[in-house]
Length: 497
Image (cartoon, rainbow, N blue to C red; front, side, top):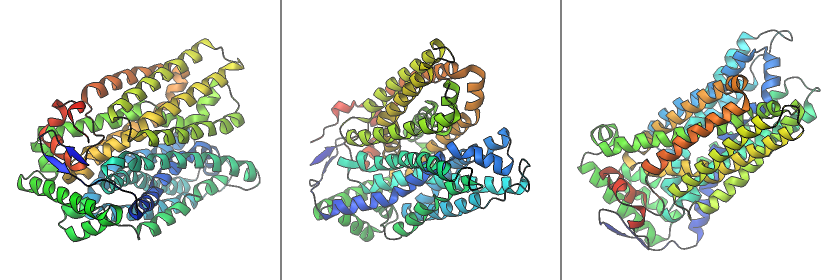
């Protein structure tokens, strides 16, 4: 097995065979993906818990919006700082820190003091709740950057897409779990126990504990160890997740490329600011992360029940039907994992944006042509929104996180993905903050026509600016990204054998 870089450098790697190392890699990815599960649960739990929470703490709509969006804006900061922390402190250690943040943030949320009397505002409860949500947001943002990088740096390039993509599947599984748990708790405890929203949030503590204990037994990223000069430890990690000869060959390749960058002084932020190709790839990364969020996917995941109520469903019908979006997201994620190592990333992006934009247009026309009060209106809109979620998850969400985890060179990987995801989360925050206002002002039709217009711009951006990454080692990509060769050489010219 070999890969050929576009600068003519031939890298020979022994084949990736089956054995205990594959099971070890599977275990590592399963434990690390608990971070993705927590990410999904914490972003999805408010979609169903918000009503009880607002009533218990006496929150108005603006205060409720602050509670929900505070997690998202904090996630932007978490993505930025945790990327840098992982470059300095290690991927594994950073994930352990995130597990602690998830747990402490959950405790702050569930023990927020309630209002002294029904219908009154609890300033202390609001303040502690927002602090807990901010802490959870930092953890969510950190998980969104560090976990994909950790998986990408451990995975062999042949199956890097499916291994790294497991984190996004864990995210949507967490969101689905939140929808289901909310529905079960509301059905069994609603009206019987006060503050049912606290039980909904409390479930999050269990995977946080499992992530903390599990990561204590997991290895550090071998590529990070090489960058820090800990070659013996790096080889030991590689030998646990590769055949012996393959591990040694990969270590030589990682050492070679890392040494070249040190000799050329192409390391860290200074390298980005002095290399136009590194600066360009960060700008492209920012564009990809923002395009993902501007599809409006998280508007559905945060406010799916509101969209369904706007279409004509009752509140109870909307809560139950909202589970559909979580189910199709998981189905799409499973399909995406099967395709991640078969389809090029650019092809996946193009198909995904074409389908999501088409769904946006169809939802907008359905909202415009089907009259309010029509029995068919909520059903048709629900089906079309579910088709949008399925398209998004099958072709875009997993592919975006995989691409971001593999495109940046080792010496700036945490910085690159951190900056990109910072802009993605910031975009997500503004969409989450203003989506209810947007729907209220222009309705479903206007909102989805706007998403469709943005989708067309994003499609043009992907076609003209985003380079291909599938089927190549991270070291191969690092050389071509640093020199700009990745932009001038067509993917078909990259030999895979």
